[in-house]
Amino acid sequence: MSDTPTAIVFDVNETLSDMAPMADRFADVGAPAHLAKTWFASLLRDGFALAAAGSSERFAVLGEGMLRTLFGGVDLDRGTDDAVEHVMSGFTGLDVHPDVPDGVRRLRAAGIRLVTLTNGSTGVSEQLLGRAGVRDELEMLLSVEDAGVWKPAVGAYAYACRTLDVAPGEAMLVAVHPWDTDGAARAGLRSAYVDRGGAGYPAYFTAPELTVSGLGDLADRLGA
Image 1 (spheres, rainbow, N blue to C red):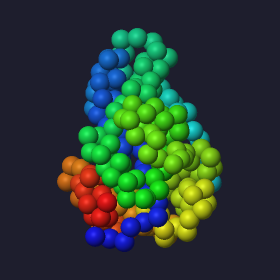
Image 2 (cartoon, rainbow, N blue to C red; image 1 turned 90 degrees about the horizontal axis):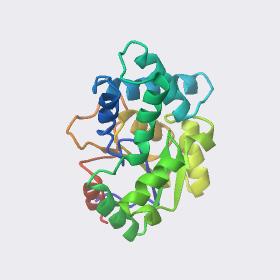
Image 3 (cartoon, rainbow, N blue to C red; image 1 turned 135 degrees about the vertical axis):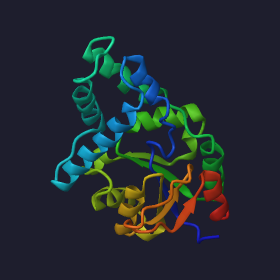
């Protein structure tokens, strides 16, 4: 069992939300389903590039722009505007991973403060957690839109800690993305990598304090 952090900061996209259904949205408009992974990775890349250049843009703007780029070479079954809207609206219908509700409740019952920090919008987080029945377990829903810079820039994690009024070392970032846990560690936070699929963790990133199979496993490891 590790020492219990004062607060847990959850990433949202893919960490809490199951984004697998987004592939169906691509298929719905006549695009290859596998293009969903390319699209998500590409919009993250561009968000990171802007952060490195000292700039920032909303997730939705990058998502829509990248869809238009990718759809330029695809024979869609509808107009580009309609196709883009159909894919982007898929975020509002996503569900959490099966391990999330019970894990969140156990962590909160242990007295740990819970918040989210997403590169997306708080509105999507609100709907996602509301549908899962755990919105009330989280103290705050945070977005990098208010931090002025995307994760994994240090400023994004610093914003979360300031908002929580905790020292970085009192907070633990929980994510399925190695780049996120690495960024948090470099900002002085503790980190837990959620490895649901057994993909492993790249050696070139800062190793997380914990590697867990899901939020239930995280609760076990933290003695919740």
